[in-house]
Amino acid sequence: MKPHQNLEVWKQSFNLVKRLYSLTSKFPADERFGLTSQIRRACTSIPVNIAEGSARRSDKELQQFLYIALGSASELDTLLLLSRDLGFVTSDDFDNVSIDLELIFKLLLGFINMVKKRIEGTGR
Image (cartoon, rainbow, N blue to C red; front, side, top):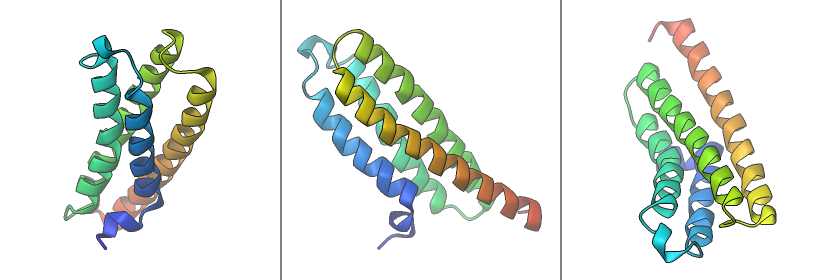
């Protein structure tokens, strides 16, 4: 198993990608290159950046990729709100996905803080 696959934040975000691919498959066809594409790119960016950062040589590089993942999570949050408000996502689906996304935010922030402390402790 690859090291990033042991990380809870990677597992949770990877599962969210699969869930959102299924959810967005029900969006209107004319949104295929709009919200559907943006949501899929934003959600995919989260586990991809966690994985890439985990494979880097230094904690500073890891931290940078974790911040990119955090930015993608924020982008995803906005896109999901818009999807709900436009009626592409039901309130129940939105609430369930939001709970998952909130957990990912917390896990990412915790991971970032842990890496920050390691950087401060070692100067790497």
